[in-house]
Amino acid sequence: MTDWERRLALDPSAAVPLYYQLRERLRAVIRDCEPDTLIPAEKDLMVYAGVSRATARRAIGDLVQEGLLVARQGSGTYTAPMAVAPELGARPAGFTETMARLGRRPTTQVLRAHRQPAGTDAGVALGLDESQEIVFIERLRLIEGTPCMLESAHLPADLVPGILDEDLTGSLYDLLRMKYGLSPASGRETIGAVNADYRLAELLRVPIAAALLATARSTSTDSGAALEYTIRHARGDFAVFSVELNDAKNALMGQ
Image 1 (cartoon, rainbow, N blue to C red):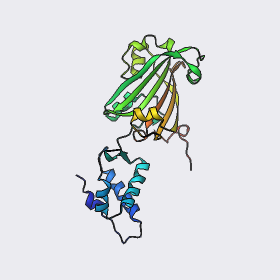
Image 2: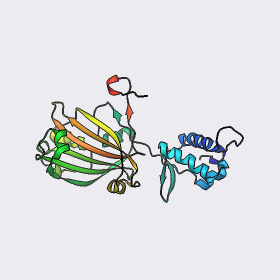
Image 3: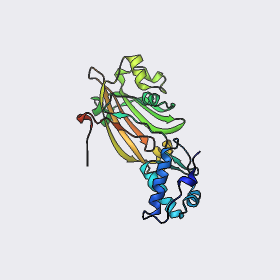
Image 4: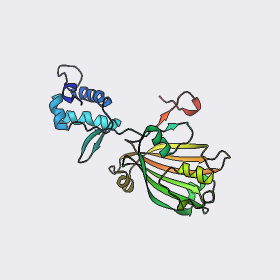
């Protein structure tokens, strides 16, 4: 059990500001905590550290911004959940496979699944005319029952006849491989930051305008045939990306 009072005791005579001392001591304690550990309330931190509410709030706010803490309305502040950490530059891997590798328990809710015209974006990504049919599958991905990602997959309808009659709550890549003999051999993934609109906020259980990671992935089979175009919106407290830096073509180094 964490001895918060001892570990958060500050030195008022030090030249370092109290909020900075508290933030760094909290950071050190957090490293020893399990994911999703409830930290003491502001009023308790004020007592343990001998600081004002404003100082406690500032220290917590910095760590929330860094993604080390997560504030949950009406519940408290927690250490961040263990994040999804796909490797950039590696072969394409699906959500279910990534979670199995991390020892997590994923579940899926299918929100929408139907045929529709490709439209502009999916058409370009899949090399189809806008009017050609695709299969659209929208799924909410959860870890231990908590929504972490909204995933919208677009597949060429001609490649996957009858897929809408299949169980779409498992690994889509496994289904493509086992039923259709199709596997993503290569692809491209772009990553950006967006703010949650009303629907994303409701589905992912985050505040409106919360920061999300948005990715767009296009993959092809080993024969070069376009296989999927998938858009994902992931909660920032659940998603990080790791990059192997021993290959210059996979890394962009900035100042």
